[in-house]
Image (tube, rainbow, N blue to C red; front, side, top):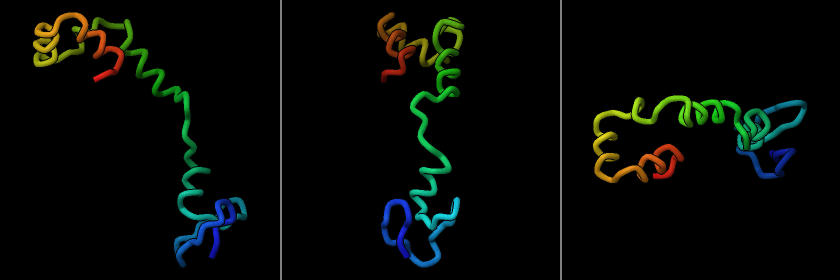
Length: 83
């Protein structure tokens, strides 16, 4: 059997039917769960790390010791998500 979308061979029993098309699992996931470039949930979470509370408030003791050791530039890296 062949996928109607990507035309790859589908092993017997692995085919899926969606909107009248017989498709493979990869194409099914692409249709049902598309990748979002600008996820509103990710943006919401990111806002929580930017300026709404002091970075020191959300750090554990080990993280605070690392920032004290490396200085303020380390907090900028932590807040931007770079590691």
